[in-house]
Length: 160
Ligand SMILES: NC(=O)c1ccc[n+]([C@@H]2O[C@H](COP(=O)([O-])OP(=O)(O)OC[C@H]3O[C@@H](n4cnc5c(N)ncnc54)[C@H](OP(=O)(O)O)[C@@H]3O)[C@@H](O)[C@H]2O)c1
Image 1 (cartoon, rainbow, N blue to C red):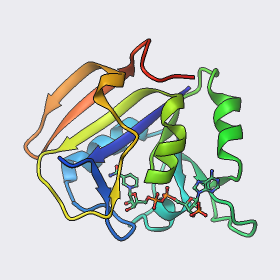
Image 2: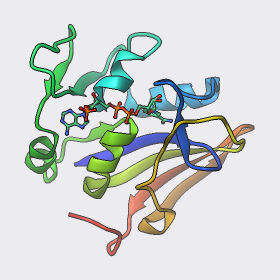
Image 3: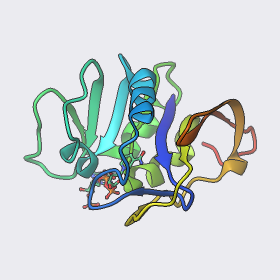
Image 4: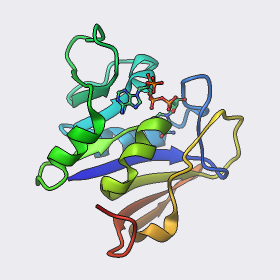
C-alpha cells in the first residue's frame, strides 16, 4: 500500500530551487519518525538535493536515466508499473516527493502524513494534486510553526 509524506505552506508550496523552502526542526523530526525503518520513494531531483543521507530507511528513487544508480538505493524506472505492482500489498511505501512524483502517485495513496506550515514562503514548486476533501482526518496535532495531520483516504476520495 502507498502513503505519502509532505509539508506544504499556506499556498500548497513545497519547494524552491530543488530544496525545501523552510528549515523546521520539529517537522524534520516528525518526517524521520514516520519514515524510519520503512520503504520510502522519491524523485531523482529530491534525492540528489537531500542535505544529508537518510539512514535506516529502504530508499527507492525514481529516474529515467539508464546510468543513474546512487549507492545504497533501488532505482525505479517505471513508476506506474511499480505503483500498480505494489498497491495491494500490505507493505507500506511512503511517497516523499517531489511534485512530479506526488502528482503521479497521489491516486494510489491511502494514507497521508501531512504538515501544513503556517507561514507563506517563496516557492517555485506546488502540490497541485492534493485536496483535503479526499481525506478523513485521523489525527491532528498543532505545533508552533505547523499543523500535522494523519489522513486516511475517504471511500469516495479519488482512488484506484
Ligand atoms: N515539502 C515537501 O514535503 C517536499 C518533499 C519532497 C520534495 N519537495 C520539493 O519538491 C521539489 C522537487 O520536485 P520535482 O517535481 O522538481 O522533482 P522530483 O519529483 O523530486 O524528481 C523529478 C525527477 O524524476 C524524474 N521522473 C519523474 N517522473 C518519472 C517517472 N515516472 N519515471 C522516471 N523518472 C521520472 C524526472 O524526470 P523528467 O524531468 O524527465 O520527467 C526528474 O528527473 C524540490 O524543491 C523539493 O525540495 C518538497
